[in-house]
Length: 230
Image (tube, rainbow, N blue to C red; front, top):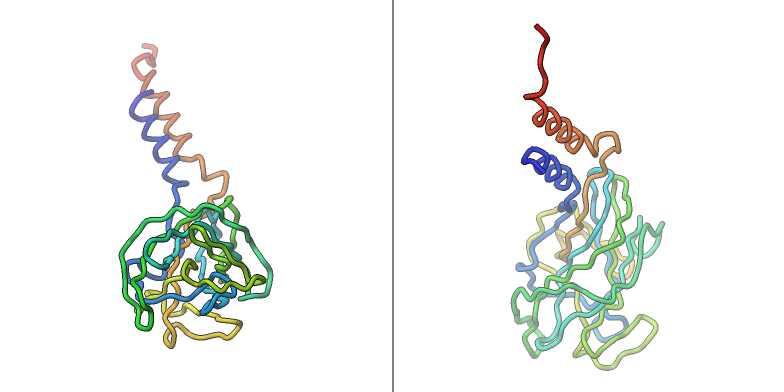
């Protein structure tokens, strides 16, 4: 395969590589957290608003995940809907295996021990979202050797996970809903998360680089065999 054809394949794949569709802050800026492990002490129902600028294909979500030192996040449930805790559910599911990266360790006022901050990622079965505003809810989070749900009372809070929050939001229009009560991010720091995917491309345009590369490759290969009769 010649270099021109390889370039066309690279451009074709790049057009569909995952992009950041929404990002409201860095995991490394996490300073506190909200419990999302069900009915353990301190847990809340938390939903964050995000905006998609173009019709897109959603492929994954990353969020700041905080828990006691020595434990690792394992699973979480998610809901994407048109309204917090209500509205039309666009996608939902249970993630049984989070991809975790330890970012740093923080100390939170009122907490007796240090907390580890993870960047937790989970991939989704790709689905389409039209441009607009949506809400992401994370719930029933669990760590190793521990699980809980909103319908199960949990006395042990040492292993539950929290959705990390930070002091400075890069998206001033982000809104946070806790137990159905709307609060602007200016008054309450939002929970950190990033939406990954790619902008939907019409089929007629999606293969333009690939087809162009094929044509270029074809003419480059046979250019020396093309002649004009005298």
